[in-house]
Length: 232
Image 1 (cartoon, rainbow, N blue to C red):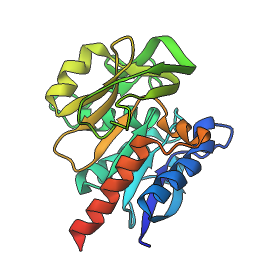
Image 2 (image 1 turned 90 degrees about the vertical axis):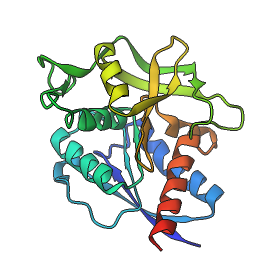
Image 3 (image 1 turned 180 degrees about the vertical axis):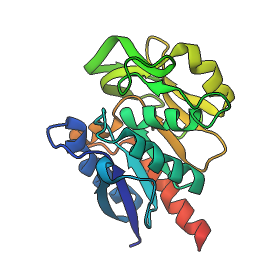
Image 4 (image 1 turned 135 degrees about the horizontal axis):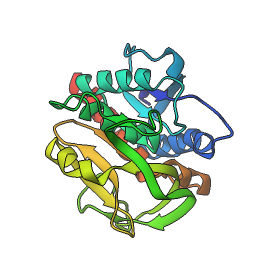
């Protein structure tokens, strides 16, 4: 059985429901793929952009991170090396921010959670915080989030989303929307031109608490397996 090196970027806190779910989500998805995983957490306080051997990186929920700039630096390394990336909740928010800051004239865009006084905030508070909230999704046909039934129920613990004023520029910069919620808001994105660089504003890992392997986690691990094959 092949074994893969997986990095979880975030400040581990077992009081966070998503952090309780993540080991189960990894185990269930790995079992379906018949692979084994060697998993370790990379705390944001030591994150600086350097990254040792890694088949896939998951930037996990739990923001505000202790070291948000370190998180952005690691995500930049993963993107530049085309290492399979999954971001859930705050993880996707920071992936959007990292890539946005590479665009001409966008170096000053910020996350309102880290900088409430920012003049240009890419991520802003939701009009109605989605804390311990669930709804159904509409998924992009043919995307890596499509499961057996073509739909997915999303579980949230989220207070921030994409500033709609910046959405057209994100799409023009290569992001595509993979899912919308039942209010029509985009809740999952993928960066085109990368082998696997995607994420969700909800927390699919929570499906594992009900004994289901999350589609998003399985799709990301499949990309890690494929990348290892390309390198052989």
